[in-house]
Amino acid sequence: MERKTKSILLVLFGILIAFPIFSMTYYTMVRTSTPEFCGSCHEIRPAVMAWKSSTHVNNAQGFVADCMDCHLPAPQDTVDFFFTKTMHGMKDVFAHFTGGAEDYDRAVMRERIWATMKNDQCMKCHRNILHLPGKRGAMLAHRRVLYAENGQEYRCTDCHRHLVHNDRQFFEYKQFRAPYRAEGLPNLGI
Image (cartoon, rainbow, N blue to C red; front, side, top):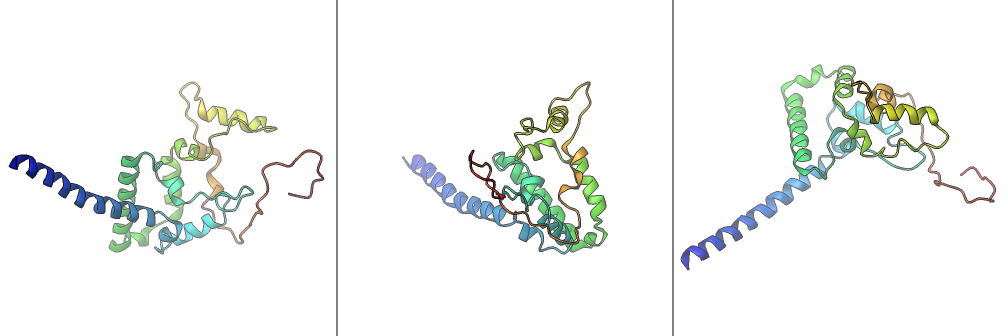
Protein backbone atom coordinates (compact mmCIF):
# COMPACT_ATOMS: atom_id res chain seq x y z
CA MET A 1 0.00 0.00 0.00
CA GLU A 2 2.79 2.41 0.85
CA ARG A 3 4.51 1.87 -2.50
CA LYS A 4 1.27 2.54 -4.41
CA THR A 5 0.64 5.74 -2.44
CA LYS A 6 4.23 6.86 -3.06
CA SER A 7 3.81 6.29 -6.81
CA ILE A 8 0.55 8.24 -6.94
CA LEU A 9 2.08 11.14 -5.01
CA LEU A 10 5.09 11.14 -7.32
CA VAL A 11 2.83 11.30 -10.42
CA LEU A 12 0.73 14.09 -8.91
CA PHE A 13 3.88 16.02 -7.98
CA GLY A 14 5.18 15.57 -11.55
CA ILE A 15 1.93 16.93 -13.00
CA LEU A 16 1.90 19.78 -10.50
CA ILE A 17 5.41 20.80 -11.58
CA ALA A 18 5.17 20.00 -15.34
CA PHE A 19 1.99 21.96 -16.05
CA PRO A 20 3.28 25.39 -14.96
CA ILE A 21 6.66 24.80 -16.60
CA PHE A 22 5.03 23.83 -19.92
CA SER A 23 2.60 26.76 -19.68
CA MET A 24 5.41 29.23 -19.06
CA THR A 25 7.45 27.75 -21.91
CA TYR A 26 4.51 27.93 -24.32
CA TYR A 27 3.65 31.48 -23.21
CA THR A 28 7.27 32.52 -23.69
CA MET A 29 7.38 30.97 -27.18
CA VAL A 30 4.19 32.75 -28.24
CA ARG A 31 5.27 36.14 -26.83
CA THR A 32 8.72 35.96 -28.44
CA SER A 33 7.35 35.00 -31.87
CA THR A 34 5.83 38.38 -32.70
CA PRO A 35 7.27 40.92 -35.15
CA GLU A 36 7.35 43.49 -32.34
CA PHE A 37 9.59 41.23 -30.27
CA CYS A 38 11.83 40.43 -33.27
CA GLY A 39 12.15 44.16 -34.01
CA SER A 40 13.19 44.96 -30.45
CA CYS A 41 16.81 44.10 -31.38
CA HIS A 42 18.49 46.83 -33.39
CA GLU A 43 19.99 44.24 -35.78
CA ILE A 44 16.56 42.96 -36.84
CA ARG A 45 14.63 46.25 -36.75
CA PRO A 46 15.39 47.14 -40.42
CA ALA A 47 14.16 43.70 -41.53
CA VAL A 48 10.93 44.18 -39.57
CA MET A 49 10.43 47.65 -41.07
CA ALA A 50 10.96 46.24 -44.58
CA TRP A 51 8.51 43.41 -43.78
CA LYS A 52 5.86 45.99 -42.77
CA SER A 53 5.97 47.48 -46.27
CA SER A 54 5.81 44.09 -48.03
CA THR A 55 2.90 42.17 -49.50
CA HIS A 56 3.11 39.80 -46.55
CA VAL A 57 1.51 42.60 -44.52
CA ASN A 58 -0.15 44.89 -47.07
CA ASN A 59 -2.23 42.86 -49.49
CA ALA A 60 -5.70 43.00 -50.96
CA GLN A 61 -6.82 39.96 -48.96
CA GLY A 62 -5.99 41.52 -45.59
CA PHE A 63 -3.83 38.54 -44.60
CA VAL A 64 -0.67 39.03 -42.54
CA ALA A 65 2.22 36.54 -42.49
CA ASP A 66 4.57 37.34 -39.63
CA CYS A 67 8.14 36.28 -38.80
CA MET A 68 7.14 32.96 -37.30
CA ASP A 69 5.10 31.95 -40.37
CA CYS A 70 8.12 32.06 -42.67
CA HIS A 71 11.13 31.48 -40.44
CA LEU A 72 9.89 28.61 -38.25
CA PRO A 73 8.31 25.21 -38.91
CA ALA A 74 4.55 24.89 -38.52
CA PRO A 75 3.49 25.03 -34.84
CA GLN A 76 1.60 21.74 -35.33
CA ASP A 77 5.01 20.04 -35.54
CA THR A 78 5.52 20.89 -31.88
CA VAL A 79 8.93 19.32 -31.24
CA ASP A 80 10.54 20.74 -34.40
CA PHE A 81 8.90 24.14 -33.79
CA PHE A 82 10.13 24.41 -30.17
CA PHE A 83 13.63 23.14 -31.05
CA THR A 84 14.05 25.49 -34.05
CA LYS A 85 12.60 28.45 -32.15
CA THR A 86 14.93 27.82 -29.22
CA MET A 87 18.00 27.47 -31.45
CA HIS A 88 17.18 30.68 -33.39
CA GLY A 89 16.62 32.54 -30.12
CA MET A 90 19.84 31.36 -28.49
CA LYS A 91 21.84 32.22 -31.62
CA ASP A 92 20.33 35.71 -31.83
CA VAL A 93 20.79 36.46 -28.12
CA PHE A 94 24.39 35.21 -28.24
CA ALA A 95 25.16 37.39 -31.29
CA HIS A 96 23.46 40.41 -29.72
CA PHE A 97 25.38 40.25 -26.43
CA THR A 98 28.79 39.08 -27.67
CA GLY A 99 29.24 41.73 -30.32
CA GLY A 100 28.50 39.42 -33.25
CA ALA A 101 25.57 41.66 -34.04
CA GLU A 102 27.90 44.40 -35.29
CA ASP A 103 28.92 42.04 -38.08
CA TYR A 104 25.27 41.50 -39.03
CA ASP A 105 25.03 42.04 -42.77
CA ARG A 106 21.45 41.96 -44.04
CA ALA A 107 22.46 41.08 -47.61
CA VAL A 108 24.47 38.07 -46.41
CA MET A 109 21.67 37.00 -44.06
CA ARG A 110 19.09 37.25 -46.87
CA GLU A 111 21.24 35.02 -49.10
CA ARG A 112 21.66 32.52 -46.28
CA ILE A 113 17.92 32.39 -45.63
CA TRP A 114 17.07 32.06 -49.33
CA ALA A 115 19.55 29.19 -49.62
CA THR A 116 18.10 27.30 -46.65
CA MET A 117 14.40 28.15 -46.87
CA LYS A 118 12.35 25.12 -47.82
CA ASN A 119 9.33 25.26 -50.10
CA ASP A 120 7.25 23.87 -47.24
CA GLN A 121 7.67 27.19 -45.43
CA CYS A 122 5.89 28.99 -48.29
CA MET A 123 3.39 26.19 -48.83
CA LYS A 124 2.04 26.61 -45.29
CA CYS A 125 0.10 29.61 -46.62
CA HIS A 126 0.32 29.28 -50.41
CA ARG A 127 -1.30 25.87 -50.81
CA ASN A 128 -3.40 26.61 -53.86
CA ILE A 129 -0.68 27.66 -56.32
CA LEU A 130 -1.79 25.34 -59.13
CA HIS A 131 -5.25 26.86 -59.34
CA LEU A 132 -4.67 30.37 -60.65
CA PRO A 133 -7.46 31.11 -63.12
CA GLY A 134 -6.22 33.08 -66.11
CA LYS A 135 -2.56 32.71 -65.16
CA ARG A 136 -1.35 29.69 -67.12
CA GLY A 137 2.33 30.72 -67.02
CA ALA A 138 2.33 31.02 -63.23
CA MET A 139 0.52 27.71 -62.94
CA LEU A 140 3.14 25.96 -65.11
CA ALA A 141 6.02 27.57 -63.20
CA HIS A 142 4.55 26.44 -59.90
CA ARG A 143 4.07 22.92 -61.26
CA ARG A 144 7.86 22.77 -61.77
CA VAL A 145 8.33 23.62 -58.09
CA LEU A 146 5.89 20.99 -56.87
CA TYR A 147 6.86 18.19 -59.25
CA ALA A 148 10.62 18.22 -59.79
CA GLU A 149 11.66 16.77 -63.15
CA ASN A 150 15.00 15.13 -63.96
CA GLY A 151 16.19 15.59 -60.39
CA GLN A 152 16.15 19.39 -60.81
CA GLU A 153 14.83 21.02 -57.65
CA TYR A 154 13.16 24.40 -58.00
CA ARG A 155 12.55 26.55 -54.98
CA CYS A 156 10.00 29.25 -54.29
CA THR A 157 12.84 31.69 -53.57
CA ASP A 158 14.29 31.17 -57.06
CA CYS A 159 11.58 33.50 -58.40
CA HIS A 160 10.12 35.15 -55.30
CA ARG A 161 13.25 36.45 -53.57
CA HIS A 162 12.41 40.11 -53.38
CA LEU A 163 8.92 40.03 -51.90
CA VAL A 164 9.50 40.64 -48.24
CA HIS A 165 12.72 42.07 -46.79
CA ASN A 166 13.52 44.86 -49.21
CA ASP A 167 13.98 48.44 -48.16
CA ARG A 168 11.40 50.72 -49.68
CA GLN A 169 11.25 54.49 -49.60
CA PHE A 170 7.51 54.45 -48.86
CA PHE A 171 4.80 52.14 -47.61
CA GLU A 172 2.34 51.01 -50.27
CA TYR A 173 -0.83 50.19 -48.37
CA LYS A 174 -3.36 48.14 -50.28
CA GLN A 175 -7.01 48.34 -49.49
CA PHE A 176 -8.84 45.19 -48.49
CA ARG A 177 -11.13 43.96 -51.26
CA ALA A 178 -13.96 41.46 -51.15
CA PRO A 179 -12.88 38.14 -52.72
CA TYR A 180 -15.71 38.10 -55.26
CA ARG A 181 -18.49 40.26 -56.68
CA ALA A 182 -22.08 39.14 -57.22
CA GLU A 183 -23.01 38.87 -60.91
CA GLY A 184 -25.17 41.62 -62.35
CA LEU A 185 -24.07 44.30 -59.92
CA PRO A 186 -22.12 47.29 -61.14
CA ASN A 187 -18.41 47.25 -60.47
CA LEU A 188 -17.83 49.90 -57.83
CA GLY A 189 -14.11 49.33 -57.60
CA ILE A 190 -14.31 46.76 -54.82
